Image (cartoon, rainbow, N blue to C red; front, top):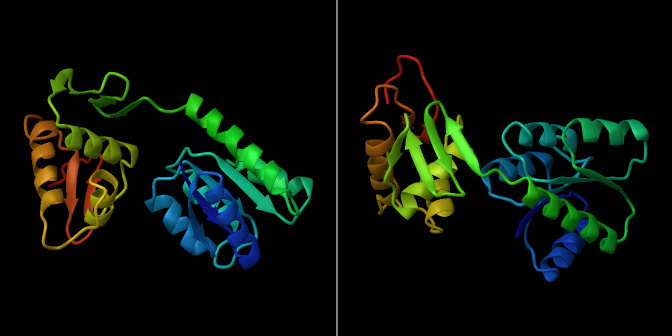
Length: 227
């Protein structure tokens, strides 16, 4: 599982990175709120360990941005022990709260509990208008018609649906779907987008998959918009 830690204290950040890595997680570390927000929104993480006091923007601002599009468990860390701060974090979408100083064993136990809880409530179906994708049956439909997708097309559509309304770059799509670094010498993303569009859009009047020149692609409903 992949964990994002956003912590500006160098020793604690390194300590958490080392401890979680040794516990079997893949760990990314951000040192500022601004960097952490970008990584959380662009990456695919199973959980977020988030400090409150951060340079750039604080943990509350990061949490609010993340909760607009992400459902991953969030464990907040803070040196504050005020009830008002804990309440604010929980009301903003945090799943748990841990005050500093803390024992690593407690943090690990809380994180593992959140991950188990998150797996139980994992989303199994996505939809946008009359376009649906069911992860349990591995079936995609539009206007009630079944779409015959390859494995990569299914993975691409799932990512686009999960992040609907967001512009996804070619680099991100290449990394998330093909697990490869994007190269200007390959057109694998463009070819896959063209084939996917031919299946989910071309036979239908309402177009959902749009190209944003110079930026990437977005799956969303538009009124009188050109692709």
